[in-house]
Length: 462
Image (cartoon, rainbow, N blue to C red; front, side, top):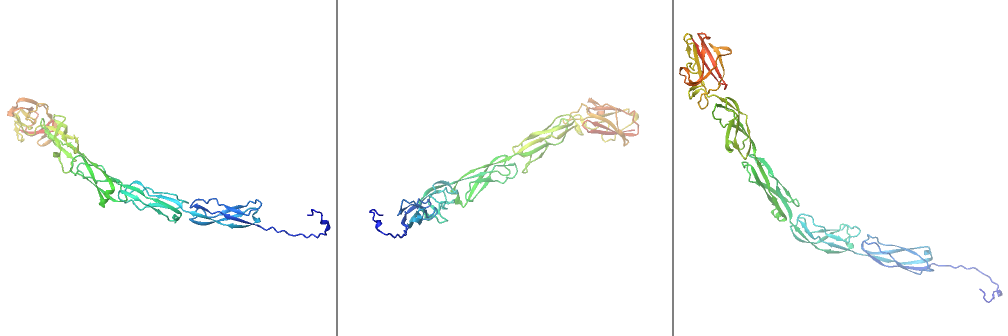
């Protein structure tokens, strides 16, 4: 520059020089920081000293991560930006201090039943899903009923607990008796059978403990029909276990039911107007019992009172121990009184003049007729005057059977008064003519009665 215009007085020789611009010194000081374990890093900061011309530089930081344990970690800045090459940067590093995270632990409180698991203790403040859990040393599932101070115990298999400042509080837990119920099964059996195996259900056993029950009843094999209690008895082994339970028992019922018994009327042969016997066959008795173990008196009756067959019905006996079925298949066969004495003399046999031994002989020349006489009676000895004969046949001559026993004449008539030949009174009579008979023969006859019995007789005609 020549503000006074003196340059013209000089002979100027000009030589160029070199200007060297050196990097400007720049200092970046990182601010120290701190955070709680498990929290994200705070925003790191720092201060530049020496920036020129309003230059703007960018700083990024590296340090501990969220899972880093307690400790002091360098905060490493990296300065970048288009103007960074213009500076000789000196970094004063800061540190990140990681402090313990608060961890709160509360022992379980409240109530539970004996044998059940403890309610959960509470733990709050865990970071990073750290595998830290809490247990209780007491009470255990076998601890007796009572109230316990619950002291939480931390379990730290991955050694993370050193990252925490732990606050621990005890709880209070009451263990109550567990409900235990024993219920006897209800069963049934027929009268006279042995009792079935008695059993039941136990509900509420804890810890696989040795608790058993036996069952009993007063019913024996001979007990009558009815209901009997089945009573449970509970056994604890060891006996002290009983104090851990509130025991309730429920009895069952053994029902003894009646067994079937069949009373079948027996067949009987009864004389007309005679009494029917109380006769039956029994099937179904147990325990060696018999008719005397039934109530009432057996009686039997028929559905008719005439000659022939009739159904017999029995009744009159009962029992609470048996379900009785009366089977009326018996048959009453009603007949006339057998050979014997009726009120009017012998009955059910040939009467005089023919002898019952078959030895009677008549002379044809002097015997034009022969009175055939008999009487039949009922059980009371009364002669029967209503029809009694089903047929009258010639059965043989001289011991030779007649072909298809020849029917003979008649009919027989009932004579209420005196019979012939001193045969008494009140009988049946037919006067047989000998005109068609041959002298020298022995004739055998049969009077078939309508009760399916018969009166045979014979005589010889000389």
